[in-house]
Image (tube, rainbow, N blue to C red; front, side, top):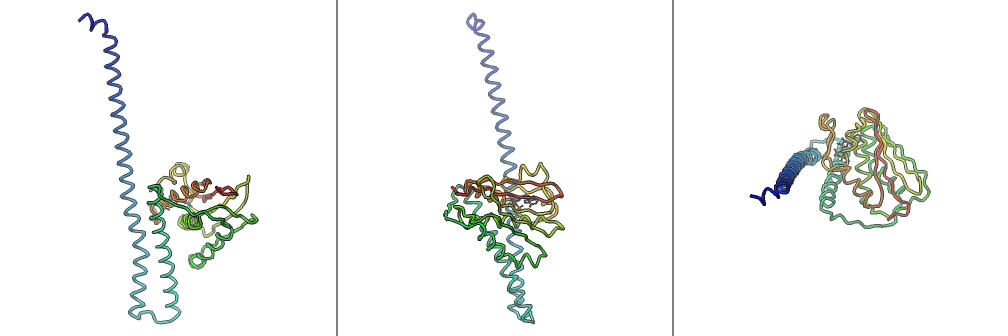
Length: 268
Ligand code: ADP
């Protein structure tokens, strides 16, 4: 008892330390559980969004194929319209699948790149040309300008196409009533800057902090039923960073958004 009395200060200290450690452990478990629950919720929303995204182009391709198969499309002009719509839908489907595959590779750190000397101006022009039919049909207008001479970077062609596809697809989806998109290629501080600007819904400052997180979609996009799965910008950011570059956004709610990709002129 004399010994205990003498060391009671130490015992009390040890006891308080143990209680503190237990409290810390408990808080940590609660925090991890919360993160896990949030991630699981986002994952199940993602699965339902992706299934929906895959289903709608498939349904329209199937409907059009059935109509053609049963000779229910009379004129050649209508037939040709159906064929181009089917082509467009299958291209959209293929981009969606590329996104999903890319996302899983990125998530597991398995993404491989094939770096080549790439003319960014040429690639952007080719890409805009490939979607020009769809742009015309939806009433959009893309203004592209390049003031850089010979903007060659070390990059993976397909990965940069994926960046262009996601940024332009978002600009279209979130344009609201506006039908104007601007794409600019400039040089600044020995860097190439590719920007995609729209005049649509814009993004609130709070959402701007979260849109690059995987599966994140703003409340407005969910509420207004705009298609999407919340992985596009995660992919874009990862690809840009793997190319030694940076992705940033400037936006004002109701005043449109501008996404800028900064890449080093000499690549990595
Ligand atoms: P998805 O478009 O499939 O939902 P993304 O990762 O590409 O997924 O985008 C995440 C979110 O960022 C979108 O749901 C939307 O809320 C917001 N966002 C992205 N691009 C734009 C844009 N150009 N204008 C307004 N909001 C945007």
